Length: 180
View (cartoon, rainbow, N blue to C red):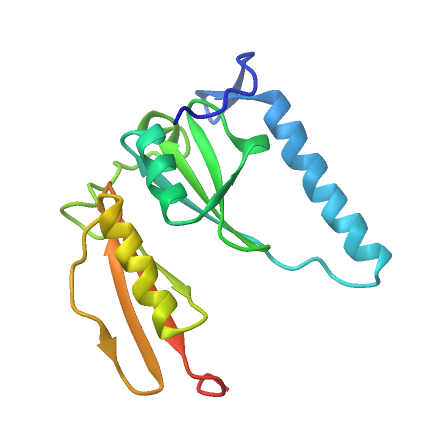
């Protein structure tokens, strides 16, 4: 599966003496999306929910898109090009899968080799124990691996997998009322 190419026009901007390539159209779309979210929340008299964007470096964007598609995730084509994609986890949670070259434009630090070191643990809640196990099975079938056995603590059940780049994804189910 190929990443959707939205536009190839790039403009250069200077930030702290370093040159960064920005997709001006993408920036405008993101800005417009946030403005629409804020206006929608304001029209209802509510504050916009905080959204989280987890950014992960990937070695092969097309393979990562295929992997996560097989797990049931969808992608926002509005924020997808040959260097990045926006994976939709929920209404307020997104994972930006970025090629290593693109990821390097956001940090002066070295990119962690997630197959050798742990940079981050991504943990998602699931609707049931069965959904936890189902997602792990899908991940393994799509080329991911497990790194430990399921953990059953009675009130909480968890298991996880490593994606194609070695990032760890924890999945948990917590009995209703256990967190409160």
